Every structure is written in C-alpha cells, then in structure tokens.
Amino acid sequence: MALHTEQSRHGNRCYGVLSGFDRHGDGERNVLSLNLLLVGSKQSGRSSVGNALIGGEGFQTGNCIPGISPSTECQLLSRKYQNFFRRQGAESDLLLRVVDTPPRWPRPQKLLQLCPEGVHIIVLVVRADLRHEDTHMKEYAESLFGPDWRRHTLLVLTFTDHLKKAGFQLHDYLTQESDWLRSLSEEVEGGVFFMDNSCDWPSIRGRPLREQLLRLSARNHHKALTVQTEVSL
Picture (cartoon, rainbow, N blue to C red):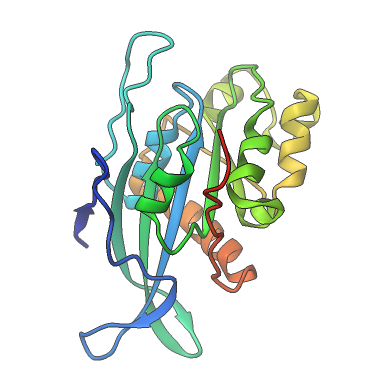
C-alpha cells in the first residue's frame, strides 16, 4: 500500500479526489474515496490521529515547545487500502485522503482548494488528559458546512492511556467531564473514539478508527459536505 503526499502548500490544488464509489483499472476494482478533515487545538494529537488513519508516519508529530504546534499549514496525505470491505458481495478498496489542519479552522477558500468535492468526515480531536474548552468549535463547523456537520462528525479523544494510569474508567470519563465536552460527544453522530497513544498507532489503533469512520460515512450514503465559502472565520 503506497503512501501518497498531496500537500497543499502556497495554494497548490489537490486534484483527483473522488466522491463516493468509482471503478478504477486493475480489473475494474471498486474504490471508495473519502475526504477526511482533522481539526484540533495545539498538541491535541491531531497529526498522530492522521498517521493512524494512513497507517504511516507522514504527518509531523513529536515533542515541541509548549503551546507551539508543529503543524503550521494544511497538509494532505492519502492512502489506499485494498480489499478493505465488501459491498454488494464484491471486495472494495478504501482510499482515504486526510487533511491535517493547523490548530485553527482553515479558511473556506483553502479547504475548497484542498477538497473541491467536499468533506465526507470531520474528525474533531481533543486531548482527554487536559481540561479545556473550545467553545467556537461548533460555531466554526456550522459556518463552514451548515447544520449537517453533526451528521458527518466523529470525536476522537487522545492520550486516553493517561486516563487509565490515573484510574479513570473510559466508559465513565465523559460523565465526569465538562458540560462542553459531554455535550459535544452527544451532538456528533459519529460517536466517540478513545485513542491510546502508548500503543502502536498505525497497526493497532488505525484499523478500528478507519472502520468507525467508514460506518459513519455509510450512514450518510458516502455523501460529502459542501464547503460554504461565503463566510468569514
């Protein structure tokens, strides 16, 4: 499985993003292409989630100066997983195109350049072992995509291994968290995914996360959200 870099730098446009199913060469294979948008605050583990999705180390991660994110601009990486699922009795490939954003919402025009066909899944990344609130997150999501953003969104809580060490039970964690995070987890229709940063991300945690995202996309019939450019963020 090849890892492809389709990096959006200085306004470069990403071509060839397909919405829904298509038939490619190699014996007319079924290929489902999905555009995923990663959103999270500084040091939330956003780029690590991206690496789990593509099963590699393409997104820049690592320790950095507190409060400074290693991601300074949007980056898009893609990977095709052959025979990832069955559809109508036939093996189908899954092509993921993952957009990692800086610790702020991208401008609508930039996002439209990256994903002209729209965004299938929004992945909100929140660090579980730090208490904070991003009260603008829902406001920005609705400004970019309209009220349907909730139907296409999954919440990923990272660094949950820290919670386990502190004696928290994951299934009880959200009931003890802030009203903001608990409300967000109930509002997004993709549910919550708990990410353990202490294990091998690509091989262990990537597969179940991809499967959960695929189920969410299937509930939306693999339709993409349209980017609304007539907004000011």
